[in-house]
Image (cartoon, rainbow, N blue to C red):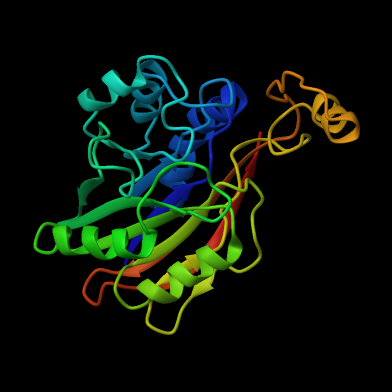
Length: 260
């Protein structure tokens, strides 16, 4: 059996620090073969930089995925091309820089990783994530032995639909973006691991990783405020998927929570 650990949205410095601190031990303890992390909020809660990406990759993360905050940091649209273990959402316009997928190899197994951006309640211009997933699977045919698809979306219905759409065709479909871990981790009938949202890696004494007071104030009066990254109750939230490399089917999917 092989094991994939997918770390949910890394938020700001607190999220980065717990990954750097805890991942090496967690990887050894659980015997993990592949580590993938969504790091689209790792730079002060919005976007990512080249320096942060390199630090996370050096800490034991094998590949980094991104979401709707992919272009938030200045210069990232140039830096992303030089990082071969980082991929942007594959269903963004083809003119966008960056890779649509990453292929990792461990124990003679090639794992393809890609992200689809949802379209319900998400403002970015993107093609249909379902057709996008079909296209990337065709492109990975013969290049990867199995595929993991991240669905970065707001609507739970869209995430669940993606799970059913790809059941039996990929090893795992795991959701991100809403920052709150869901209680539905499991394996679908066709052998695809699924979880609607893996949750975030960062400060949970917060509103989705941001300081409580300014967010609450915005809800109360509608006035603009700066939403700084919170600092307390730091957790690493991830999904651990165990799968059979021979059948390319998952045998288990569970939420992993590590506190600082």
